[in-house]
Length: 210
Ligand SMILES: Nc1ncnc2c1ncn2[C@@H]1O[C@H](COP(=O)(O)OP(=O)(O)OP(=O)(O)O)[C@@H](O)[C@H]1O
Ligand SMILES: [Mg+2]
Image 1: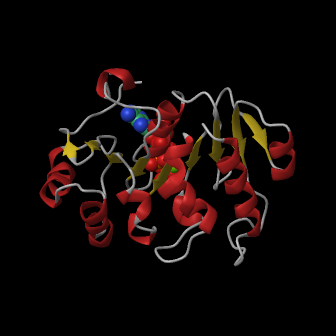
Image 2: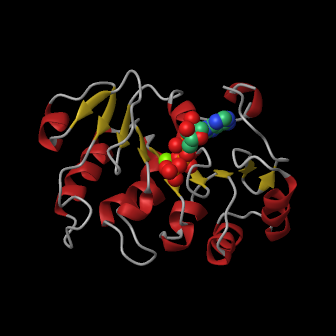
Image 3: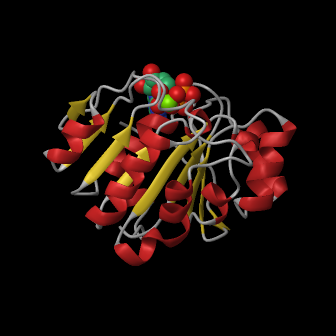
């Protein structure tokens, strides 16, 4: 089954969160969703994405100066751990000014905790919509994420979650019924199944055939 068949109501200006345990298929699904966007930036926090059609950058300044339509940025050392968020601010402010851009953050806990996040990223998440900016993020540990990643997302793709704290975060801020999260975990043997929540309306478990 193709993405367009599964998600007929998906709109470009919406935000998305991909949740699920390690190896469940978050990044694979995110790549399909990101293919909808013409102008995009992928933040390859783990330096392991091999996405076709994206220009790979290691130097943020170079990317900002001469961006392609689709960009994959592998942040230099210090990007994640900088307490003042200086490099992150450069990236997210640039996206703010670029407008009409989608950004996908592959493992969002690499750059945000539940309490600490770059202000410019927070602005993109909470106010980017008016500028045509979509924030998409993936995480295997949503309990460690700033809640707005979930609460501002119209679309939540929830694969299997194991830890109670992660499940709790998904139902509290992702608007997914706790029973559904549990059911999904027991209903299928394959960890590639996910439930899709569109503004709180949740589908039965889905699997993508690629
Ligand atoms: N629907 C699917 N059917 C079969 N295999 C899949 C499916 N989705 C993903 N996979 C495979 O499962 C593996 C893990 O997928 P992926 O990297 O997308 O998971 P992830 O949730 O992003 O993992 P991680 O937490 O390690 O980043 C990959 O080898 C991928 O090809
Ligand atoms: Mg991944």
